[in-house]
Length: 268
Image 1 (tube, one colour):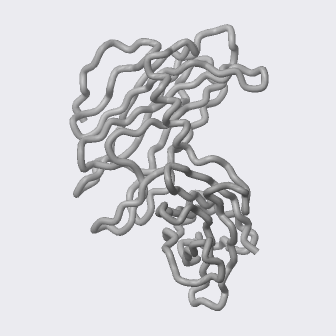
Image 2 (tube, rainbow, N blue to C red; image 1 turned 90 degrees about the vertical axis):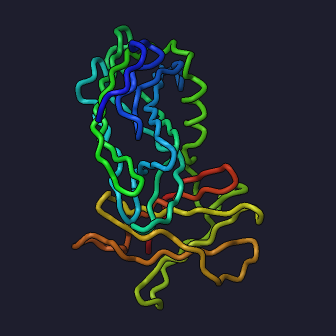
């Protein structure tokens, strides 16, 4: 892709790398103190042309998830990528999961030596898709000093959009209430009851314990004896050869009314 030329990189942001369909840059944010430890913060910002999309960590029926590589970074012990709640798209290729327009993936960075500068060097492989999908290889460098303020609000907003960890049957407006395996159905399926305000639509995503699981997306179904709950079903398909659903821990993500939660659920 032909690079987009931008201002020189600073501690606030790197230059953009991409073209008119999609481009990427690193942005800095202010550090936070958590339990006496300083956590450096940053973000990977993707800018997509109208009508184009990219993918979540689980892309759905087609597509490829972004791959973040920070191996060439300096004075970095670890980088954790956070994933904002995605959208569900229905198109000619089936149902896919991802983002349109702009998205920021928040980063949490741990330095090897807190007294020395941290330089992030990112190689990002991702895809931008409209009617066709185009693979993209983008790179960006950024010195992260924990003092950047120009894009702190963007990173903070993206962090707020990341699904919050939550247990089953949590006393909250949005919660996963029941998860049961329906062996009487052929093929077997998982029934999931979700509690949310009645006037808020619910989008539900299901992931297996490893990336090679390819579960279908949960769909609304009739049933259940509690009018306060809405039921979804996901067919137990897309399980890798040699793997078993019994004892597997599914990761269920629910999005509704501006809230998003993530609940791990073991299958009996």
